[in-house]
Length: 353
Ligand SMILES: O=C(O)CCC(=O)C(=O)O
Ligand SMILES: [Fe+2]
Image (cartoon, rainbow, N blue to C red; front, side):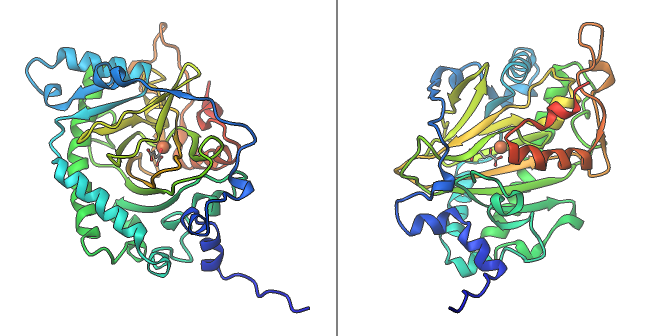
């Protein structure tokens, strides 16, 4: 009997795309199903209205102290918050979500143009191709390096929708400016040098990740994204207004993140936790699926330079707060990160003193 010809790289990728699998019908392939149902998350609307809501306009005002104290408390206890009055117009954010949605609605052949065969990390695809996870996330993504210029892989940038490139360029500029304000406020709240979260006071590498989570007929056993912390200093997340899904973990309890129209969700990442010697937490989060609506989000990751050595800031080590993490190179971190992703473990555990 004649054997089937081997799949090309593009066909292999297409076979692992959640959106393509979802198109075939409601049944979720066995390998996406976890053995057990996930621990439930609770609603916490008051949390997002008060303790974890930061008004950016107050952070730089002459009476910033109470808002800075709130920021410090949010990051020390939860590792995340939502920010309002950040200066980016809601209409712009909504358009960015629409343009991202239009990208994922394009025919498969058009999207596959953004998955350069020699480039596994950047571009359109699925993390399961890169990491070979056993229970893949119910998620497709477009991953694009935005800064520095030498990391840009223009062959992975969508030509369609037409506005995509212009929008992402604009968003990157706006978030870079916001990131400076937030990073300086975080440093001030710790009574530390203003530029300690920036790379030598300059803009460090920035990466955008467009997430697409198809609706899923078995949300109790399928996650859009398994629990993880981000390999970033700080992450800015723009969720779709109508569809919730993001959840955060604190003291073994999962909490739903309420979507606040016009706000951005900000979480601290692993490099941030190390730099603050554990004073600020890298938030563990996951994304739930739902059986009603597809979901889009746009994440922007700010990370240290490739050649940077990351370790606790000396002023944050004391008799009261002994050193929690060893110094490490970014490349060592990514090696551990890849392994941890497969195992569902926390990369930072490998760097504890
Ligand atoms: O889609 C979300 O709400 C979260 C995405 C996320 O955690 C990530 O891209 O790292
Ligand atoms: Fe994340």
